[in-house]
Length: 179
Image (cartoon, rainbow, N blue to C red; front, side, top):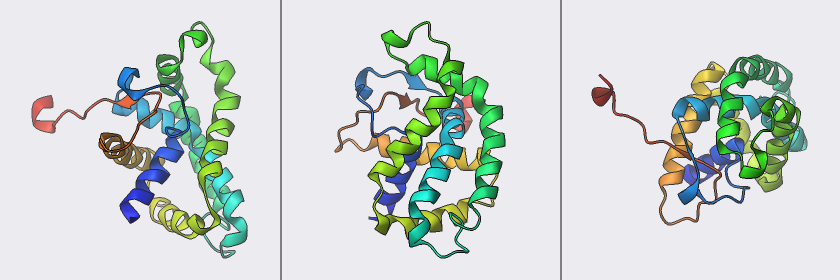
């Protein structure tokens, strides 16, 4: 049950669960592209989750008392990740999106994903999500993005669930095969 919840949080943060494209025909993002995409939307998603959970959390909770500092760290990472994230967005965009400059979409993407993430959350989820945020907060944003992508890859492999993600994450290349 906890693993399912963690996977759900990961997929919510990536905005995977609330889209309409079918994964079977969806483009495959590299781990690096998926990490950049996560980093690009993370500040807005973290902020929205913190705002939604504020009433359920203690004043010193990471997603309440530490929210501003955490979001600030992720905003810096989001800016650095944006060039690669914009390429990933162009890669997964529909035919209707061809020719649209991803930079024009940047102000909308984070808030849109944040809304998707918070729409799925219940007040009872807030304590668990804060506990996860507390454990992840000391990590550099790039490490958190890497961890979230690994969890999302495993969630996407779950053959028993319908997967309506707009993209898949390409299978990891074993380290021994990469040499």
